[in-house]
Amino acid sequence: MEAYNPFTLQGKTIFVTGASSGIGRGIAITCSRMGAKVIINGRNEQRLQETLSHMEGDGHAVMGGDLADMTTLTSIVGALPKIDGIVHCAGIGDRVLCKNVKEADLDKMMNVNFKAPVMLQTEILKQKKINKGSSVVFVASIANESPSIGNALYAASKGALASYANCLQLELAPRLIRVNCISPAMVWTDLVIKGGVTEEELRLDEQKYPLKRYGRPEDIANLAVYLLSDASSWMTGSNIKITGGVN
Image (tube, rainbow, N blue to C red; front, side, top):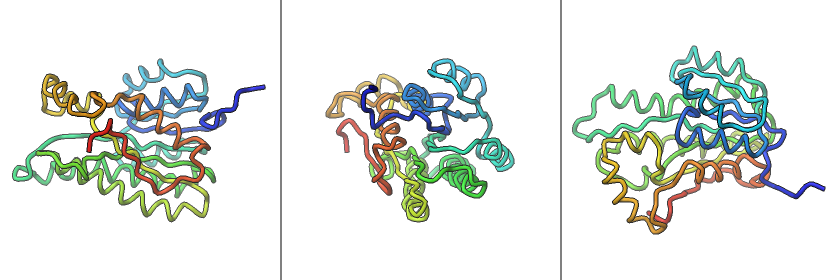
């Protein structure tokens, strides 16, 4: 007799964007370990193959491409099988002071962090690629409620994503499709290290966290597994903060 596991993803097909590194990679790998067939997307084919090499089980697929390009996005969705879950994790994070914001900065941030996941979700629904009872997970951020200098565009893009998810969950509830957000504090990824702050400064800052460290991709991945699994079948419209105790 197999041990009871409400968090299993056995028999589920999960689509993870931004899976070439960081949180997305961690989620893809963890989902594979929990029994899912995982389809991974990102812009860097070589790094996607690295992610794939760490995944367990078989039946996984790589669908590389820039989701900010509508032609590419439509093609990727057309090639998708029916999915039981999606994690919208692709994103960028550039810091710029409000007084220095250029239109190009705003367009770039919103196109990648907000427009792309919204249009991807729209296309998935239009092409009827998501099963009844599925789970949609957006990786947002506590940034929209925890301001920091130079982070206005990133915070705004993630706040917009969370607001969109609030409405999406109402529209998809009749099909028992759940929609939730994960809002992490700082997580050790390439995005953080390349964010214009030195690693020494980051190491000092993480000591201000009650749990004395930033998050790791696997911390976020474990929460994503819960939201993708049947264990969260009565959970929708939530935005879960995972912060190591920091506000």
